[in-house]
Image (cartoon, rainbow, N blue to C red):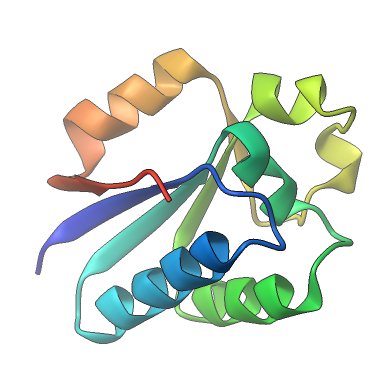
Length: 112
C-alpha cells in the first residue's frame, strides 16, 4: 500500500478542486492511504458551509478514513477560523505540513 498526500490549492467551486477530490477518492479506493491538505484558496473547501458538490466528495473521503488537513494561516487569512471547519479536519501550520511531507507520506500530488 502506498501513502499519498494531495495538496489542493483551488477554491471550492473550481473544476480543479473537484478533480483533485475525485482523484483522492479513487486512489483511496485502490488501496492507497491518502491524505488531503487544503492550502491557499483550497482551505475554503474544509468549511462546514460551501460548495455542495465538493462537500459530497469530502463526505465520501471521510467515510473512507482519508485524513484532511487545513493550513491554519491560509484559513485565517481568508477570514475563517476553526469554528467554521468540518470537525474531522485537522488544522496544521506550514512546519507541520513539512513534517507530513517528510515523515508520513511516501508521495505528494499537487497542486490542483
